[in-house]
Length: 108
Image (cartoon, one colour):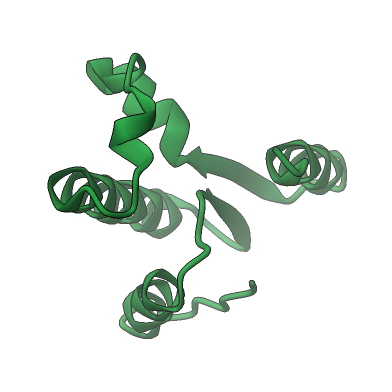
């Protein structure tokens, strides 16, 4: 609850106002759409390996959806991967995935 999603929404609104295609890919929204919205605090416990695997799988799924969206766009487009990317391993996985894409610039 630091305002990251709020800031992303404001940046997206600005980009769209300037004519740039932009979209937000929020992992929490995907989780809620997949009927995982009532997850308890145990789901977010870093010692819960099963839940951690589910969270990582969901993050990969959202990234794939994001890259499919980017590929479908004509011209410049901006995609925001809005998730809790607090661990080095998660950020490294995001970086590795972005390196596999053509014409993608990654910013943290």
